[in-house]
Image (tube, rainbow, N blue to C red; front, side):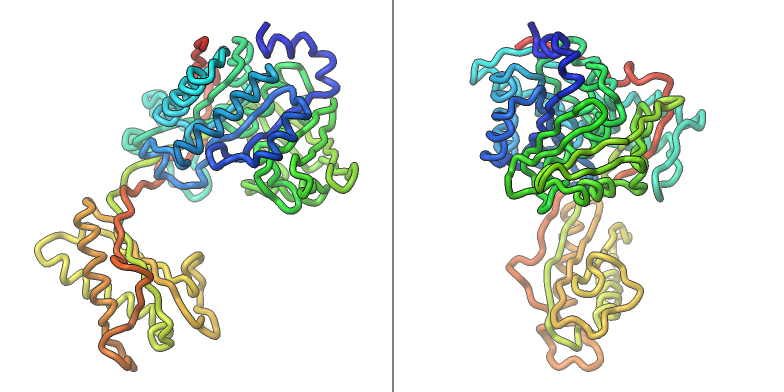
Length: 464
């Protein structure tokens, strides 16, 4: 009997006590060994792990590369595969390979198959693709069924065509279909984090409000604890409530820390939108069981009148080169905005004599406005600043030429009050100009209304 079949046979019991192990907040960066062992010793009914996010930026979606080191990623996958097969419980992994497009999914599946072959593991594997049919998305654009998120502009058909990869976030429904096919291991492309952990409770008929709230929290492992961390966490769903228990004894899931986690990645802490509906947590209650564990109840689930999908797409914008330097000269620091503007003009005149201005040169001054563009400089000014110069150009050679010229003229730039003809800036190493590879930006970050979800996220089954 499959791992899912065994769960269904115990359905009545598991509706009262279902144990989910959140193994990793993002698989591929290593899993603390002692915490994982402690979690497995509690004999969870299923294991889940998120593997990706848009947090690392648009590069990974656009390039098809993993954000994590391949060796570490494979090791993490192997540990969870061994654990799930030893316990004979389902293993669910979402947003394969960092961004969840076809190249990321294929690389992850290749690792899974390789581990199974090397270690003699046998299981039914489900893979779920998340790449969106472009014609369907363009039809949705034409019919007004696509809306932008935050400050994004309205989506155009040209944006859809330009995206190097275009994915949609699947929800619980896709994971449930894979489980109904008796998959022991589910590897999904781009997915909502909640789908990973809410699918088994949904399949068993558990109350969906508490299950979805639990899923929203445990997908980040022990990040909801004090102090927060990435250790595995055990969530026990007990009917209309759930209990959180970090597998690291030094981390405490307190009512305040768990409630505060509702702010994580949410513009509205009371409302979590999913493809199939909306989770409202305003009515949730957080009660301490002891110093380390908290019970959560009261969240409400409202099914959507029509399903929606969050779309993500990334487009290539050029090649990037960077310049790294700093200064402790108070005269330079006081005039740094003027100096950088003046140097930019000098560089433009030099590198655009025979070529068009086909690049963007951007400066971030850490200590003044590196992280945030403050309306006014700090008072007093910092003792030191770090300057990051970034050039994006059509070719790596062009970007490198711009930052090399920038370095030389910034080093020797003359300004009122300068004491020396050289030494305006200092370099942490040589060469201070580095190629940073291909640059991408998100050009699709929108919500698309659809008639049904299942056709967009096909499930493929193979027996290993």
